[in-house]
Image 1 (cartoon, rainbow, N blue to C red):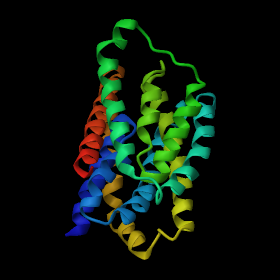
Image 2: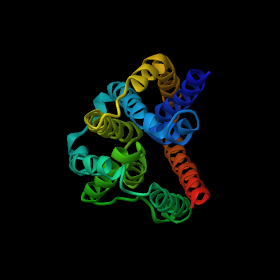
Image 3: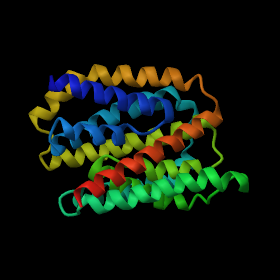
Image 4: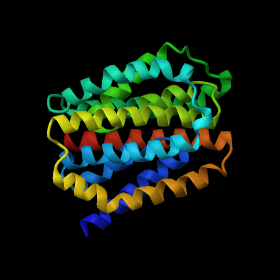
Length: 244
């Protein structure tokens, strides 16, 4: 019964990332701890995140640009080890609350004011910070998507370029996180067993999500990205406030 519940959660998480390009770790980590211990869910999601990101990256590989990726990659490589180190030393409640408030505020600003100002073009230098924050959150909690998603919504990239960029970054984050979790003993036999059992649900979810993605236009894609950010922000705030 536990495996069925885990399969349903990872299907939903993979579907979300298949449609808007991110959200697997956020959805999965928001629900999996209800069924399995958090220290089991974290390495489990790291493995699945790699599978999902690699699958989607292959689909949109023609749109990968190393110029766009460079500053984000530098930040990620520095941030992931810091996040893994923080996992046992930092209270995640305040991080979730701060991130939740920021995400809700950003989405509200984006929908009400940014559209009136025309195109939003932030400097590539902000990519270093976005990559660093994403790496820390990804290494610690498998929730590194929001800083990257905020950054890409402020660039004038196409939906394919946006999705391709995010997948390469998520794949790298997952690889670094898996190595970190393996060296700290978190890749237990229980984690590997559960990974193998429900892997088909991940494949099915990302495939269905990718089919829907192919049918939506640029504006719908951007709206969907902001909608997921808004929901994630509310979930983070709710989780933080209920345990303070």
